[in-house]
Length: 417
Ligand SMILES: C[S@@+](CC[C@H](N)C(=O)[O-])C[C@H]1O[C@@H](n2cnc3c(N)ncnc32)[C@H](O)[C@@H]1O
Image (cartoon, rainbow, N blue to C red; front, side, top):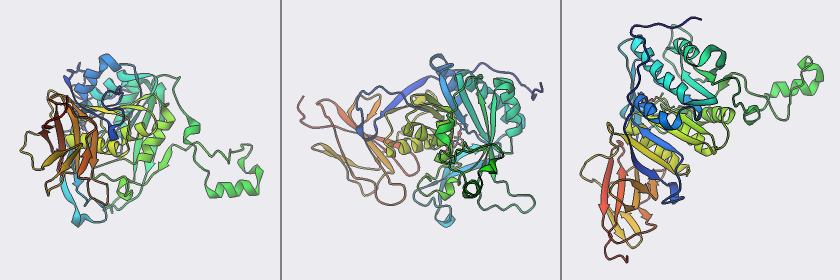
């Protein structure tokens, strides 16, 4: 069995992060304040976070989708504000996204190896792991997964094809990614019927003309076919209603297919490189629970916004002792409490704001949120406060266009106990 070697190859026992519960978000107030929370976003390095999750989740995650940096040696920028339309580069406002920069290939492979080893420990028996890469490193990753999960557990090499402009003139345009799928053992979930797609027109016509066209095989023309291992989905740059401006965001349809095929409602789905939160969004939409990690606040905040817009079930956000979610900055927005409402009174508006009506000074319980609509329209200036109590401050958190989170406390005056 061939094994990949590189200098310094060894599995290092990872140091678990100290996880800090920062907030619990109840989109649209659903279940506020004490619905049990089964969905989690974590801000920090996924190695230390996965190590911290082992005691609770080892062998318990049904599906892991991993979309790490691809070894492109690039820095990816985020497009912020409303100017994120791919067709209008002059209107782009850019901000830091994430780095895919490495000293050498050994460093990158070791980064993947340590993390894939933990993912394979977290995976439940019968669970599936989908690793999304491209031509830069997929060949090495295949050997890593053969070693860590077992070549006999290889399920599919999925080719996701797309098209779009490219400056390349000296080779064929590189317009596919590779997704390597492995399962933890032979008894795994695969819901073929949940992902059937219609046969194409020409197949339908051929079978309408001759029943013998399948050479003995009769396709189920009504239910459609189980997709091949090559998929076409347009890139997010072409999907106006999905684009968040977060770099290398993946299409929701891609994640939906993976989730529907390889998990069941009520299962736990994880994404330890979650970026803009496509996996948690698709998981919530299809009744799965999620764990999602990213190293940048911009990613975690983008995921939060998308989950709030989609009115997901409640979810928690955790930081680590190394990461902070809220900046100690002077407020640039003004809010006023009147009766049962908080009003945004400053001329300047944030991209997101939310309120905790019973602020305990520690964990933010978000009962109500305002999100800038994706393409058109203004953010709401008024949120209602579901409950107030004497002695309890109301806390407002607001996030700027540049993804800085600011916190402001309001004291309700003369409230009945
Ligand atoms: C290719 S992007 C993921 C995009 C995502 N699938 C989406 O649809 O938006 C890779 C992500 O991995 C994150 N990342 C890189 N290294 C990380 C680490 N050590 N721990 C956690 N996240 C990391 C980056 O911040 C980036 O958001």
